[in-house]
Image (cartoon, rainbow, N blue to C red; front, side, top):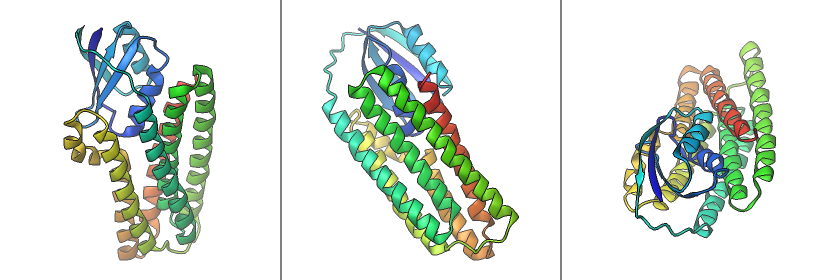
Length: 263
């Protein structure tokens, strides 16, 4: 058994963690993956070639580097049931907030909420694909990854076109109070997901959970809240459109990472 440690600089939220899990599921001999999102460290216990693992990680373009790889006497006991239950929990939370933010975003005319809802949907896709990877075939996983990636890209492009249309034309101000209230609840939901994910790791990982609040999802939630405040203060919809275009860009970036898994 070998213990290999990688530094992955762009692994800053559970979505990247699950993309890595899916990517490495193609490699035989990997017994356990331990993630430390706070320090962006991935520790693997495996019987496979460390160079093969490194090459797979490189394809995700998350700025990985091998810190060490050595023999270990650690005994690994495999358990996928708890992982599946956890993935189902965070998937349901993310998908529920996709529906909530999408509906309230359309009603309140907030592109920030609509974009954030798509980010929640993107996370749901990743968790769903991880569940498929646990019990499904590699071919099935890659096929669904391709469909999910293209669907995300399509939705994000439609959102960007709508943002441009609103920039060029007159549109009623979004309801700032709805933006702020819904984003606060989304912030709490993301916090719960991050807590659950961290609690499932080593006994000290959850102590670093506060570091995870620098992740993209949390920044996006805060960005929508700030945009709502600025909409009210400036009496302009521009802040909402700016945060919308930023989030749509992040959604497209995540979609391309998912599409890489389908190759």
